[in-house]
Amino acid sequence: MSSRWQVSENDISFRFVASGGPGGQHANRSNTKVDAVLVFADCAIPDWLRERLVGKLGESIRVTVDVERSQYRNRQLAVERIQERIDGAAKIETPRRATKPTRGSQRRRLDGKRKRGDVKKSRKRPGHDD
Image (cartoon, rainbow, N blue to C red; front, side):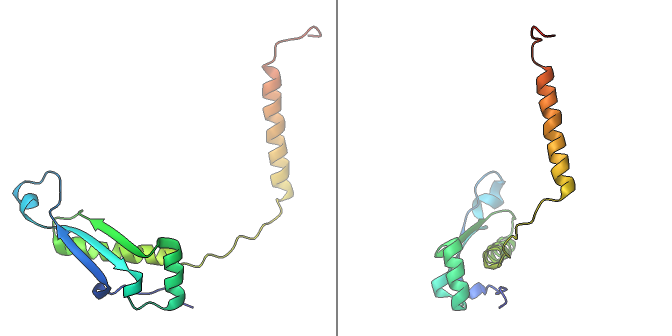
């Protein structure tokens, strides 16, 4: 099963609003900020993938982008970010197999513990014996 599913821009609903912050006349008059929403129930995704995405991401993905001055470029970035989230959630991770520590790593760990204990012992006040 391939987890790679391409997002179609037709499945995403876009909303454009004025980008906040400084920027002068261009920023105040241009609706360049993109608010993109992908609802999994509304798009044509294989059922196994939809269940996986809803379980990990919820019913929908919302992305807001106002990085660029261009509405077109912000829209492209929003689609890319949605695709990245889907790819990350759809990735099937192999379970970790527990392995035994090597003899060398055990020895290094115990040597480190011994050295640390010696350092702490050297900090003690001298007793009657010393």
